[in-house]
Length: 112
Length: 465
Image 1 (cartoon, chains in turn purple, red):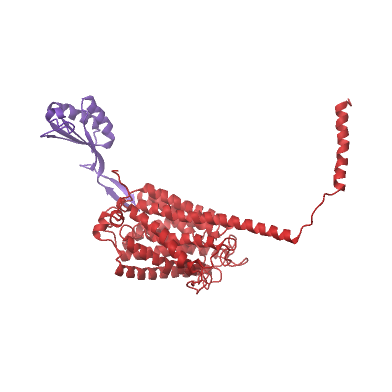
Image 2 (tube, one colour; image 1 turned 90 degrees about the vertical axis):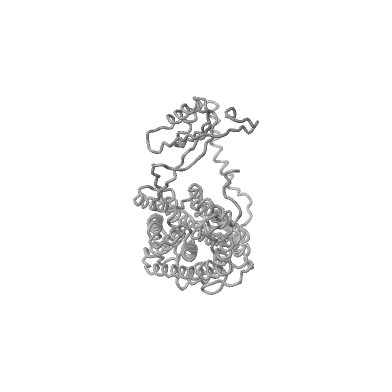
């Protein structure tokens, strides 16, 4: 089982969700986040003083999938979220040790 | 040709004048008009005039209260960080309660009773003698209680304005004590000097007659200077100026500013103490100055930063309203436009440049807008005041410089100087006293947690519930 974490532009959320649904991934967690990589912030003005806002709004999507689904998921996210500009985001894949369905205590891949 | 219809019409035409004639020759029975009738007619007219004035004055009083709650509460509240929204709003609200009680007990008397040139006496403590009959020293066509409650709304908002300077770092208990005492030792005396019977600066017979229609010195200069003194005494917020502390809700501030603009019609036009043409003058001037000042600040900011901000626009409007306050019932409409424009540029300069030159943390620019705007407005009043709008010194006498009375500008300077001195001295004494007894500033930990939780055990926004 693999955990896929994707940090994307908030405006791309709907496109990514639709793309994931199309490849058969329905379960995911969406978090509102702030951050930046190499992207510069934007400037705002308060009382005549200019200041830079470094932490930009982002959306983080997390999902745990079967190993076989990794390429499909990663490609779906990537192609839906890509604009070609700095600030598109990142996808991380890590291994998951255990998955449990709370409702009936199912364990393992069937819990996904 | 001469059929039935024609002959009938001809007949009625002939009969008509004769019926008129008979009406004129026998007059109906009439009663003679007596002195009593004339007196009751005069009383009814006077009563109608008084009711008209009272109606407007009661509405004005309500409008001025609206300026504090929620106008100022929202305007200031939106400008602070989210963790301090309730604390900020509570400061204005506390004034609505505390100042009301103090005013009723002794504040009104200290401001408006007969006394010395500096302060009123105790003739009206507990509102003794303040009835529904007019007090002809002040307003002959409204009950004195109307006058008292109208003035009360001014007494409420003035200390509330000061809270902008010490936003986000003063203890609620200390603020309550400090501002309550401030209203007694700074506001009431200043009000007495400018508006009270026998006041030093009263336009009617004061030794230094100064023109302050609705409170340029009494409200804005006093609160503005006191704000500056408090900001300096208390010190800067932790992290100022390196940390960005932008407004958490410009939306709330925008709503508050618009409530202030509309409420100001009660503040200025209500200061005509009646519903006649002078109220119209003040109303028009108030609106005009707000508009040009918003424009002035916006233009200054557009040039300075490259973009016009909403905060700049609404701050500009408030600055214009402040500056026109002393002038509102004395100047023509086009000078009002100029006064507003000047305030927009001057106050934005004070906030953009002067504040950073000196480095004081006047968090919400109470000094930059009210202190500076009020001072500017008071001086320009001396220039633009005209007997054509308000013959304040008598029917034939020149009022301000445009009438030829250039000395009035000096009188205005004196009034402003006294306001500066009284505010600075009074505020320093009170700050020292309260600091040594209760302690003024919240602890560093409480400042970091925020006033809402540390002072009130509440959260302004519970986004999880």
